[in-house]
Length: 97
Image (cartoon, rainbow, N blue to C red; front, side, top):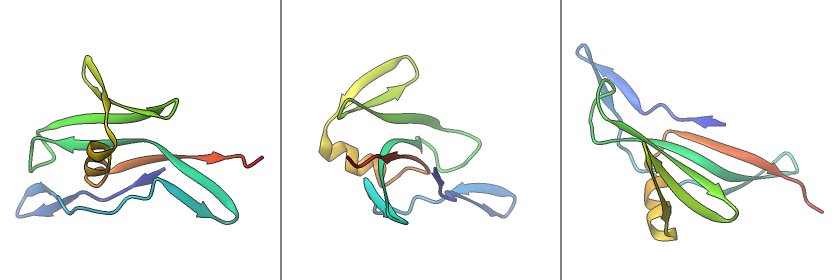
């Protein structure tokens, strides 16, 4: 799991850091291969005390957006955009055969 610091304190407020990042969907680390299978983003607000959270999860090679009681499939273009705005990323190790 990777957790990015997306909030900062400024004059008694907790502000959101909206910097766009490049997310790798595959990582090689210490001779192990990992793939991104889920991430979370905070949207609709510039502060930490308001807003909304959405989860994006890979299921059988398809990505889905979980937004409260709504679930929808996400196309690859949207996926890259949303992933660049996330703050919590979950990777799983892939066993190479």
